[in-house]
Length: 194
Image (cartoon, rainbow, N blue to C red; front, top):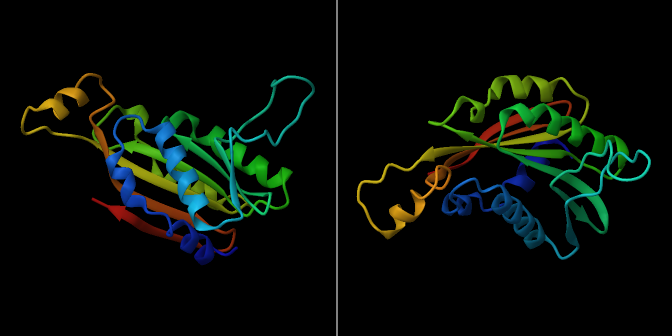
């Protein structure tokens, strides 16, 4: 697939729905990506907790597992990682590269990242550094960057009280950018904004 075909596929997802998911949202984002993929075609399927591309002896020692493996006609097509911590991005990229090496049917990898616009530094990624790392590899990859902002409650009601019960609940997704690289060209676009 070229970068435009990949972008067109990703852009079929209804990204606006993510604005209604609050808090950490890791498992909800995984569910959203699964649902959107399954909605696109009857022959699409999902492996949740994807099998490792690396098998080293018995047990799970040395294995890497993507959060999802989006499949078509019973072939793995798109390994997906959803990550909230910046320090894990490079490891997640390597995992996605490993899937491309292990399975010929893989078209591209997808790394979905959450970025807190007004939170702790460990949750703020350097978008330009990530794009350079992707651009420097030989495998097609998609970076999805969602920005989360802490809700500023103007009134006190049951909803605001509920969200304030812990530190991670009062965050909402306000912007989603997409960077697609197909090893020859790239596309960078905003795919949703509040």
